[in-house]
Image (cartoon, rainbow over all chains, first blue to last red):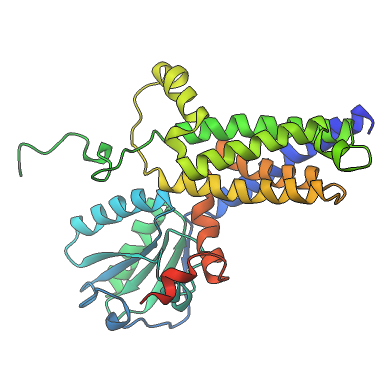
Length: 143
Length: 177
C-alpha cells in the first residue's frame, strides 16, 4: 500500500479512537432521571433489610472494575453525612441473574431509590458527584 | 474518633494483596498502542506473500505475535509481573509523585485477558490465511489500548457483565449455587 495511504489509515484510527473516548466520557457518570415507576422491593435486594428512610443508593459492582471501589467510598461518604440515606453495594461478579434482573450492562451502575423503593435515577459509570447530590436533595425534599 | 486512623486509608490494598499504581497499566497500554499502530503500518506496507511460511514470517505478524505473548503474560501472570509493569516501577514511577490511590490488580489483569483473546484470534485467523485479519485485530486491540491509556477506559467495567450475560464467561460460577 502507498505510504501516504497508510499514514491516512493510522491518523484515521487515532481520530476514531479519540472520538470514541470523548463519546464514552461524556456519558460516564451522568444522572439519568427515571420517569417510570419501577419499584424495587427491599426483599429483592440481597442483604437489604429495609431501605433508607429518605433515599437509598443501590450500587452494582464487579471485581474487575476499579472505579467501583472509588464509587463505593464516595457513596459511603454521602450516606455517612445523612442518616436518612443508605448505601448498598451489590457485587454481581458471580451473580449475573441479579445483573439481568436490574438490567445492569456496566459497572458501577447506581440506582437512586426513594424511601418507597421507586427508582428515581440511574447512573452508569462513576457518578458525577454534584449531579448526584442535586438529585438526591430533590428526592429528599420530596420525601 | 480514633486518633490512630491512618491518614490515607485508601492506600491500603486488600489483605494479602498488593495494590498497583493505576498509572502503571495505563503506561503499559500506551506502549502497546504504539506497537499495535506499528503492526498496522507494517501490515499495510509489507503484505504477506502466499503460503503459511510467508504469513508466519511477515514482519507485522512477528511483532503482533510478540504483543499477543505479552498480553498472555499479563493475563496469566498478572499485571504486576508484566515487563511493562516492571519498567514502570523501575523507570517511570520514581519520577512521578506518589499515587493518590492504589488499585486492585484484578481489573487490569482482566483487561490483559481481553487483549489476549482479541490478538490470539488475529494470530490464528492470519495464519489460516484470512485476508486483513491481522490489520483488523490489531486495529481493535489498538482502540482498546488507546482508550485505556488516554481515557482511563475500564474494559472490565464495560464488557465483563455483557460477556457473563451472554454466557461466554463465568458459567460455572452461576450454576454452582
